[in-house]
Amino acid sequence: MMKLAGAHWNVLLAMAEGCCLKSHRDLNGHKVYQLHPLEGPPIPVSPAVVARLCDEGLIDSNKKFPVATYWLTAKACGLLAVEPVGVHSTHTAAG
Image (cartoon, rainbow, N blue to C red):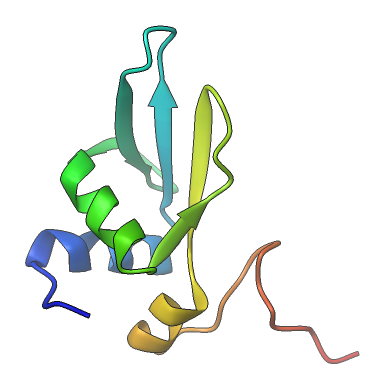
């Protein structure tokens, strides 16, 4: 893995803290990436930052049209030392 810049870490940390990263695509195919915090307006994210995080295997998406939702991969969770959460988690609750 190549060294990540601050913008990459900011997105990973925001996602680990509960922000939802989404790509919104219009009918012409243009994508806009935004972090959706639990409160407040969405925060724009550079397409290059998202592409790099995907290329490094740190985030993945459901690849839906017109809005794709991204999540942290196990690789990112290990890097950040956080437990994976959500429907794509391999972690199972004890019960």
